[in-house]
Amino acid sequence: MPYIKKDDRIRFEEGIKSIVAALKENGDVKPGDINYVFSTILWELFKEKPSYTLANSMVGAMECVKLEFYRRQVAPYEDAKIKEHGDI
Image (cartoon, rainbow, N blue to C red; front, side, top):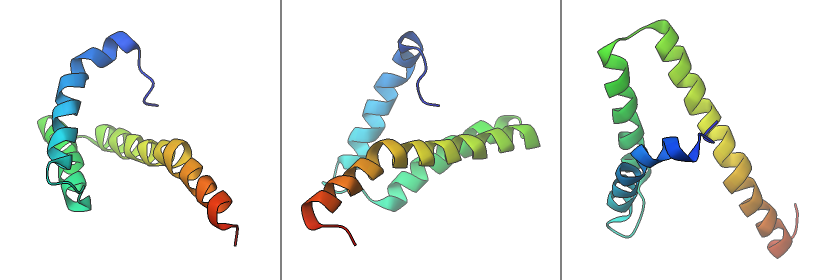
């Protein structure tokens, strides 16, 4: 769940803004660039002390990121498009 305490978010904000700006730098966001950023973060965290428990936690976190993104961002977008263009 991405809803950590506001005080705990502060340490990540500058880095996140920098990464987002770099991803948007050329005017379009490329899936390969997003994949590279996420993959590099995960690989760096995993290689320091690899374990099944860490791998399982990381895969679970990625799945939750996917589901939460779909629930909060994609589904409302799709609902708006249904209203705009009609349902199937």
